[in-house]
Length: 353
Image (cartoon, rainbow, N blue to C red; front, side):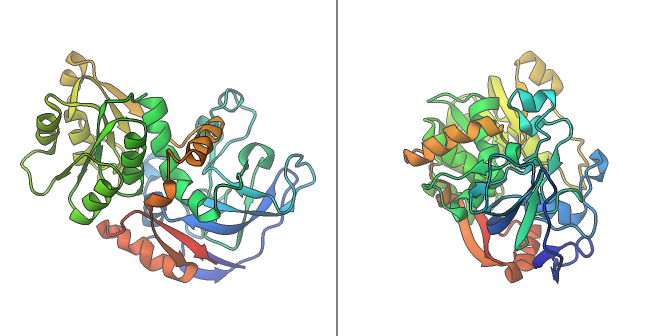
């Protein structure tokens, strides 16, 4: 079968012929129908995250925002059969640890990130295996299509968990979103749908225009102002209730914290690059005196999918609005490379394998 493989970090992905996977007893094989292209794929392709022991090896098949059809079933799998339409969260849990038993697969003690670990080859391929399939596969309702589900991927569900669960936003809250890539635009849409007032901050007008279409009540081009945090405070008359760093560089993280009102909530979604290597200076004294909370947010617990699907069925959330373009596997290397300069608008999705 065909797959997009990291031949060398930073060099264009290779479209190679690889062996079609065979399921272990706990696994299913999923025939890929759609898979989002995420900035986390870009990080892995660049060779980032070695500083946290999570560097992705050369030879890896990337792709962690998939939807597809079960094509083969391991002998111990009980709840799935060939032909089932499924989504697969990027954080593959073991289903047995304390966090998994409590419904938090995203915090699994032995989590395997799909497409970002040599033990969990990804979905930029005609098919891919899923470990502990009874636990990790989510059956798709008929109302959610494959491309739409790939748009939900990791970015939309991560933004939902970040705002609804970690920050617990409320109607009327001011929500500042720093960085309007896929996860940032998802956060804008979700915040507006949940009754908050989102402010979009980026340095590209094209992304700010898309943010307005998705519900941003105000936009700030960081390249055109002396201080993005001061602009947020001017707009909100004192500071945002919630602020989210959707990019992961030092400037956006610091700006997010500095945008907050007293007792505000910062949510960190973006992971850092080789420049920061996980270390960013923060105004700790101000955070202490103003009782500002700093939340990390990673993926979304599996138990939250039903609520997310219900909100989509009701028309409250429309993840399809975030999708930027659909492309073929051959076009993937160029699209991934364009993320060097943050050129993609919305979520690109591979639909032709």
